[in-house]
Length: 80
Image 1 (spheres, rainbow, N blue to C red):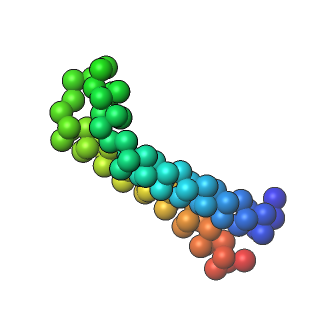
Image 2: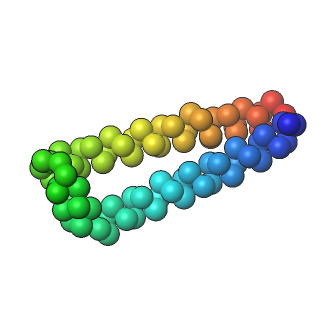
């Protein structure tokens, strides 16, 4: 695999992951109450706790996108 192929793969991974990130945020904003009720049937969560867990999940997802997709892409652009 060449550097150009790796760079292109990381670019598309970044685009797809950021798209999923924004889609999940949009779904969360538009269907917050439905998602909370759906998961509330299985877990005893308050709305505040549910929001905190969602926020932590989004921070983790964004950090993974940054460190595993965007930073390697930038490094390959600088090196190659």
